[in-house]
Image (cartoon, rainbow, N blue to C red):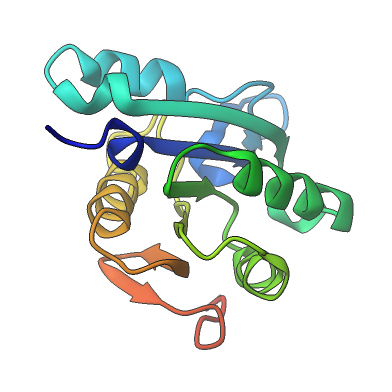
Length: 167
């Protein structure tokens, strides 16, 4: 019998482009008021058995350039309180490395694999978003990576110390 606790994946949401929508009045994408990820995974869940093992916590819905120290502390609290050992943090790419380093430097637990991921193109309303690919990649990696903090983007795994935003 499998350990149900170890099979759980907890997705902690902070906004970013992955959870953005097109705003015609501003002629740009803006972070949505609430995450589309539970709905997105719910639609996928009809065909994927692991959906029952995914939980979601929405910390904030911000462009990562607006993420504050308090937001990072709230992400850290959610990670440490989670009963899952597999954590994915969706995050905007601009300050994703900063949050990864913050988690690495402040996390007290040593039993969790934590993968930060995001996208350059929003999932909702865009045909060629990298978001679904990055989410799937992060889910696959977090199930096999040893405990620690990682950034999973574009089919690559980075440690917090080696990752940097490439503009």
